[in-house]
Length: 129
Image (tube, rainbow, N blue to C red; front, side, top):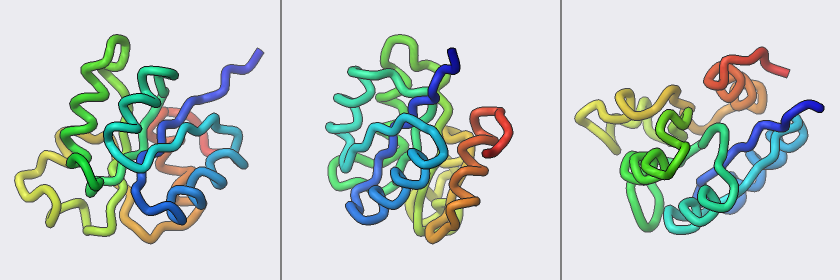
């Protein structure tokens, strides 16, 4: 039996989150969605994700802080993570370079479906669909 990869998608923009979730589901991923940090923590404790796609600017917590909290959960120490932001390399959000320290990859909005699937596959170390 093939194991389905679990993705935690954390994005506060409802339309963007829905579009990304649809792309990922169509590619065969099991997607849990959250619009804020608190909801993301609840989702992650229910089903430990294999990867997290995380908007850097959330209404209740910075993305880098949320990622540290997620990785502090039992079994999630090395959780692969992709930063998603409208800022080039997150520089405006995180001028001290912590984005590159904390995240495995960076995806700048707007992006194509192919770019989304490629960054997920690359971060997971598998071939893109």
